[in-house]
Image (cartoon, rainbow, N blue to C red; front, side, top):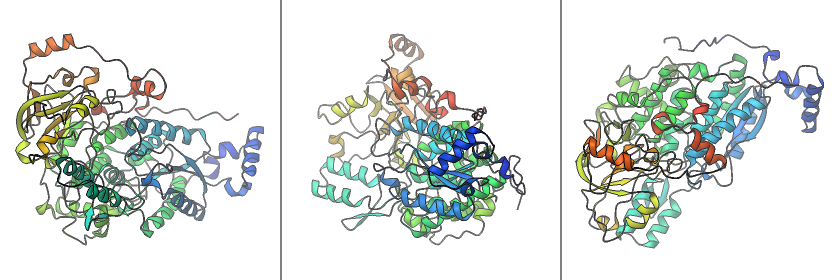
Length: 589
């Protein structure tokens, strides 16, 4: 086995207790240190409980509004048990809980707030390492982004997927079956009672979505990056092995502090390639592009949209998981989980994964997946039986998206892969909702539905509106897919010929803002092209007439977000937070 690419980490190196970051708060003799110790005593802790031991922050995103993390109170206690068993001292620090189903206008706005909070929690308190507790979509990148910028040893503990849904004798997948059911209800194919029965059984345990949506996509990507214990991302939340993993996570972070294993040692360009290949092999969410771009820029890795397209051209989709396939994450775990999938990919397509990248357990990715077995070849496919042999994701360019857009070809009906149609344009989501089911709307199945002003600034926060609804009158005719274009995102549990993440966005005058109803739009996925068929002179004339809309916010976090957020092709981070410049440690006087 090749030695790991470690970014300078020395596995046999051990720091002394006096080198612990927390020693600056507790170990040096001063009036301020006395005050710190007295306040720890006030909390019930004796000096030998924590002095000279790794102080570990457990950054917990539990809240009563987040069903994906409803088991985190128990998991935090299990992490503490592991930390204490390994000779560390745990401190639980709550952080904002990004509850995807409830938080408006979009949790992406608050991903960056969680990143800020995580970084500043870890910097401003006497902690030597961190366990990051997340899982619901944006919590994973938000926590990792903040901890990466802080730079102390950290490990990610994923929430785990919920159990399979079940209602009416059918196995249900979160998100995917809701979207399908809603279309069937609108088309009159099911009644209100059947719809309510579906809702009652689609989410029936703690944990995040059990389809290959954004949550499972990002926790799996983070495992492939090397930031979790091997196999952690696949374990269902209610499974007792998930609790055991939490204990082991607590034990591991203590050793990471003593050996000074930091995110900068793990988050290399090759590690991000592994994460991308993993997302593609899983048929993961398009949201991964936005999040991995932001995470890479925090780590100083020059990742671009084009790299996703390059790797997609040679990565097979071998996870038979909804929405692209037939099974759910619980089945995936029983079939061997992510380790088994990556090992099969490595065995059958050698060189696709960079197996010598370092991970947080001190071993390489190759060592972590070596010997992992597939127990069900219908869930984790051989590469010669891949759901999609290559190109499960496509990055588009053209006069509508000079900085890029993205589509999942496998999620679209094949006859729409090359399509020219008449644009039906909606200026915002409110207009779309008000008009899409109007029987007099001039639209047919060959039309191209266009939504403007749904991007990072326009949404605001680039909401998951990209699976634009098909008009009711077309659903009743049996139409289930159309070409749809927006600068929004789309839930990873969604499907359809949906072009997403159009950059630059329409709110700032991107070409999408200039499209008018009646324009012809040409989509050519094999050629990676997306164009509106008007000449340059007409485009320039429209640009001269375009007027920027009023800002969405005039105060608060929304205003700060709007002043700093980057476009989708750069990850939608705050520009001031990108990069690897070191922030000075706080003075302690």
